[in-house]
Length: 195
Image (cartoon, rainbow, N blue to C red; front, top):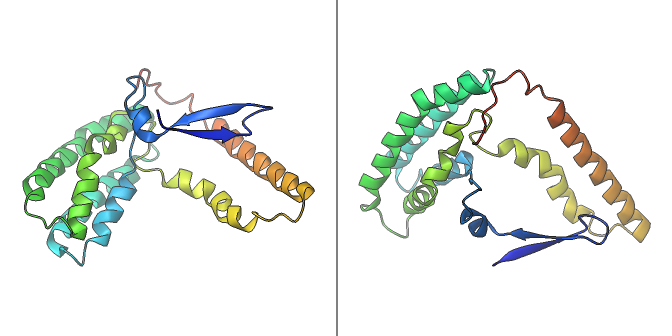
């Protein structure tokens, strides 16, 4: 089993983090893929195959328009709207992907976009079955961007004490993010269990 070792979880602790495909094999874990990443592949393929890329971009625009319309709705309402509006759009898109995949040059950017999306097709649609989930992970990526950007800058803290101070700042920043997340009012929303 391929794993990543994470040091520093707790005093003397080591956590083993399985890789993505190992997690995917577990029946009690549902993986959700990011729609923005799939969209980005088609955006990059616009010069290669403008017609197919434009069609795909239109699909993504329609899905994101639905999300903008329901962002302030309850989780139950979000799920209902996604089931009614987004799922049929996604199903038609999946059929279109299947019909067009065989007509592509395997070395082209549009083929890469098709391959990426088709491989993750079901996981990209997981959010449609749960009103708590987001269509993409952009908010999460944005929240960790300062850490990712700072990592290189803070690689050389100057001293052991400087490194400890940096670690404490990251710890406090992470706890603030968790506190902010927990303070969101999720109690007034419909609880979706077993999803």
